[in-house]
Image (tube, rainbow, N blue to C red; front, side, top):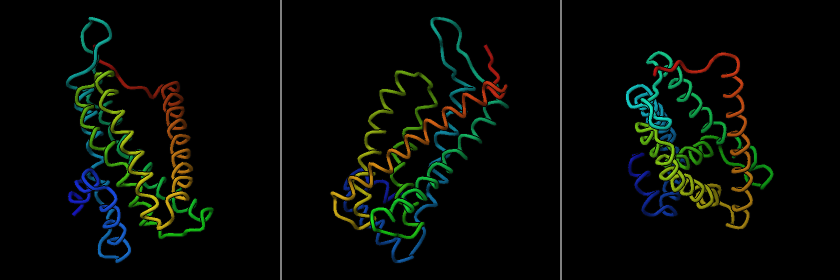
Length: 200
């Protein structure tokens, strides 16, 4: 079922958001389980890319990460993705009170999970860790993720588009703050000696 939702979000987002909302409201089946599968894509791709392909700085030999180090990073990466999606869902639920709309947490998490789908799918590019290529393909995926948030939130939360724009902007702002915090935490952990083990 989630594959149909994913295809629908790329072909007819507004209609698909309505289907996801109605499915969630009917209690037919939880539609957040797919996030556990999709979050594997960037984690596994990153593991393969950093251990098998590597990346180059200049014209030197490729730099790779040892299997053990990459595995630990992949597990943490996977868990961070899951925590991120569920946290944003919780934030959507909490911010709803400010916008006079309170929806069940599972519906809010479903919104966050399906909104993140383009980023999960483009994670396959981490198999080939070339910065310019990942940026070139990652930016459109990021833009479509933002579009899904702005188009899906008013439908899922059943509020007017104007209020949905402000609500979506607040959610996006919280997401950006969380991303910056995660990057700062990563730099802090590296500084404490928890950096990857490289092979040259």
